[in-house]
Image (cartoon, rainbow, N blue to C red; front, side, top):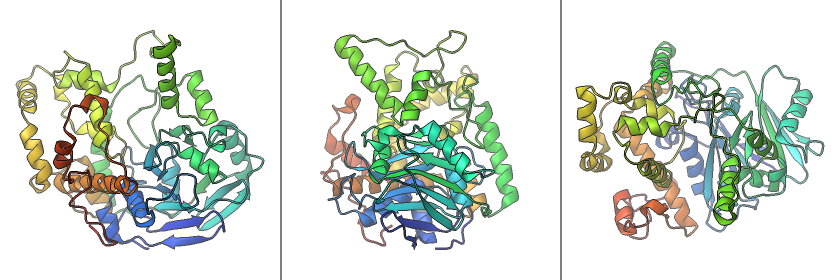
Length: 463
């Protein structure tokens, strides 16, 4: 459904893998504003479709590939896209956020999202060239690693530029930790590579040349330069040891890969899941692999947490960083690159920690819990702009302040929890928070005593 907003291609398509039929899925501008971003968009579509009885390996398990409104506008981190479906690991709706260029080329082909339903009758791969959508036999690709698969696709297509995603042998064998590989980036954790393997879909290629509409192009360029400059010099996002970044992003978040990691990506296996398996072996039987956490000069690599600890005066306890990570994983909904928000933190907290302003800010942050609680209840008081909202206004025409941005984020979390409750799943707190009273946690989130979002009255027109 065509859009009057900037930033959007204006079309969502549904592809039935069984019949190979292509139809347009209705998605209005009102929905684009209420469900801002690829992940919340996909979850809303699943909420309309799923009944709570579906399984990961079923034709009714839709796989949704979705982009956000900033994809293709040049905004840092916005090149990423989401893959959403029921996970074979949990049986619940799950999403994996991935870098690479697939999201950009999907937009240039004229689509904001793809919905894959049904199951291929034979091994297939899908070619998207603008409005031309064509299925091909994938027997010659089946059994190949992701590297060789992409090389074969390049020879078959002979395009000047395109992007692809594919699965490896792990996905073909329905391994629950199977990833989807796009360019040299992995969509992992949720095991959605196994879902594509069950659907007998080996790969998708996409290209196109449609321009992406921008609301005010000149202002978008100015805002983009400011955001780039802030991230390029910020201590949280300017790690010089990282070697590469996604297309058009100043944050070089990719570290030099190991041989083991390359093998896992080629097989299509989640490297984080594999690392946790090695950790389990180490704890149980004393297996200790060679640690590869040093750079080429033999120095231990620096992560974001040491910088954050220095900024907020928490050097005394590394456990605080782990608590931060667990809490974030427990309550957050990702969408845009997770690193871009770090640029909103004042850099002088790290670069000039002895300044009076830095000392004062650290002091009040320790006692700001009451304000955070109040702001969560009344986001309208946060009537100011950040990089994300300014870029949204100039590129799409949406007028959002920080409070409105956070309100959409809460709607996303409530929608995810609603979907979990559809499958009779209560929220689980991370191990560091097991002593927290669940009902108190539910209340803080605005849910009822059973963990169901009490303010999320779900109807087809729900806001």
